[in-house]
Amino acid sequence: MDEKVVIKTKHGELTLQQLAEAQPGIARQMKEIGERFHVLYYAAKAGNWKLAQHELNVVISIFRVGGALRPKFNQDFTTFTQSHLNPISEKIRAKDWKGFEDAYSKGIEEANKLHEKHGYGFIRYVLPKNPPEHFDLAAHE
Ligand code: HEM
Image 1 (cartoon, rainbow, N blue to C red):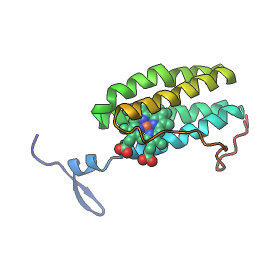
Image 2 (cartoon, rainbow, N blue to C red):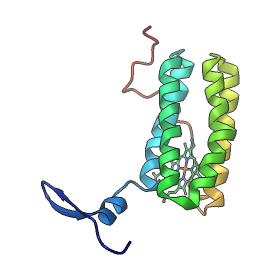
Image 3 (cartoon, rainbow, N blue to C red):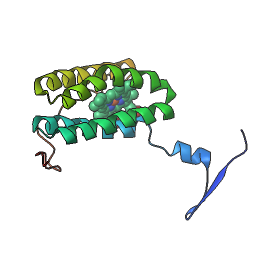
């Protein structure tokens, strides 16, 4: 497996290894997860359950792909999805705001514990006080 597979692009040649290394790592993925976690809270609050579900689905899929790219986080991503993200999804499907709020805050608590576990105790996610301004959060059915 030592031989290099070279891909031709319009900008020049790249090896598969260079392409693999150029994939976003956990820091870049977390940035997107943080944003989507913000949007999904306020979407649910406004009753736009479809938007909330969409944002959560994307978060779950980032964790799945992220785990393949960074095996050392794979187990925690999978467990976190099962124990904290799937319950949020259930509350969204049930359009249960109170249940959603509870599951959501447990998710933040656990995420911050995991940051600490991996040596990033200085990174604590906090739900922004204001809704995102770049979405119309109203449910347009
Ligand atoms: C929905 C839940 C989560 C949210 C909202 C969240 C949010 C964040 C945010 C905002 C950052 C800082 C990104 C930056 O600006 O550099 C971060 C970093 C990080 N998160 Fe999470 N996180 C979540 C779940 C998790 C889970 C389950 C793990 C499991 C291991 C994890 C591990 C990490 C690590 C290791 C970093 C540091 C990455 C680096 O800079 O190299 N997070 N997270």
